[in-house]
Length: 87
Ligand SMILES: [Zn+2]
Image 1 (cartoon, protein in one colour):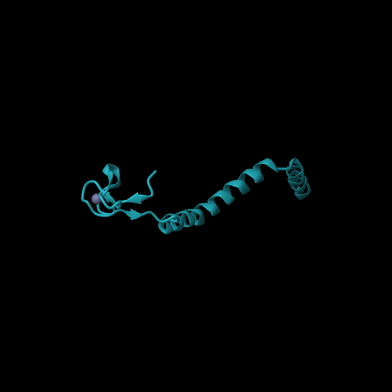
Image 2: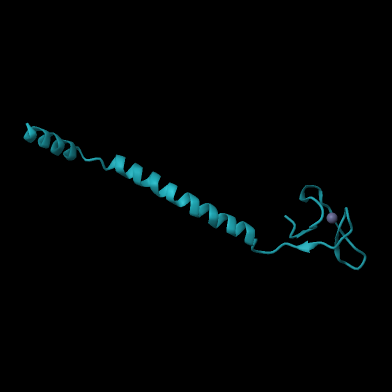
């Protein structure tokens, strides 16, 4: 994966050339290439936003699974005992 890109051409069909003085240029438009930033802030912000929206859902699913697995049979006995006392 190249660390340089042309901001004007689509990323799908970019090819890079080196000028006679050693500067990397775009093969299509001839503009000098830009260096990709190490941390893409847009991508980091998108990931944080996705996590903010997905975390409550994941917690809810985990709690639901825990609730089903920790179902105690004694609770149902207590429930039936209360029903018997009512009569
Ligand atoms: Zn270009």
